[in-house]
Image (cartoon, rainbow, N blue to C red; front, side, top):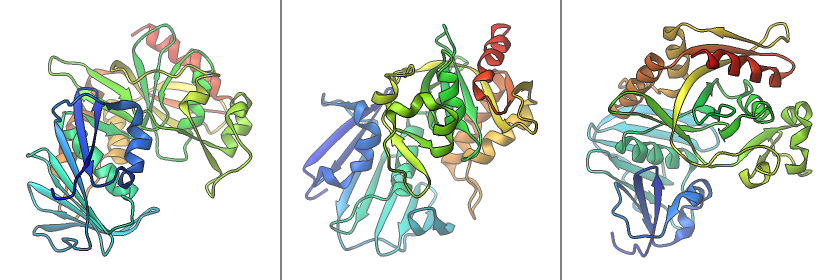
Length: 330
């Protein structure tokens, strides 16, 4: 690609991704999220991302329209399913073309702009998928005294971060409060590791869990949240490194109707439906190939680990002994 002068590599637990562009400033969000995974050795990447500044955007590629609408924060976009190639288009602003089988993607954007979050996450999903890994919207915590971890899933706003921090105050180790990378092993079993990004703490979480106060400032964003670094949180709770660990259980988070905290067995079919509903996207053309593989990984996870409903009440820390007791018997 003409004009590409800077290349950074990131090791996503064995899947090395190389990002190249004329200026490193074009992908600040990549480095903000993946900076601790950057490698300096010239390792051969398993997936390449080329970022090109140009006023010429390919806005009418061949394929079927899979999505046409608004996405939160980023505005209007279209997704085109071209079979072997998937295109994401923000009209007049930037585009991405993902060549999954060939292991590369190209991002084109107008000069003096930055890559949008939605586009970034689609490319990151594709890079992980190329290495047999899948990003899930779940929290992940190691069990006290064990290397195995539990995954906690629920739609945004249900209380994953609050519950995760409360459990971490009781001896659990925080891998991620929102994004875990899942991999089904060829010889059986499922593993996961946490994406090392900041934790967003809501005002309500801060009021419920006063021990996080040393990491908070005085300013809140429009969603009444603050982004807190893992380095700061590591001074008050255990933050786990980006190490692949076995998954011991899957917990579906729900709010308790009577303020009491409970851990109840959950039917595997119900657990799969709940997890897939929050993690598998269906477009106008059905499931993209990448989404089908993610669905298969979710199915394998649900088959192999016990599944529970965690009803969290007024004192989320009370969930800690319930989880430990249930999994001591597994």
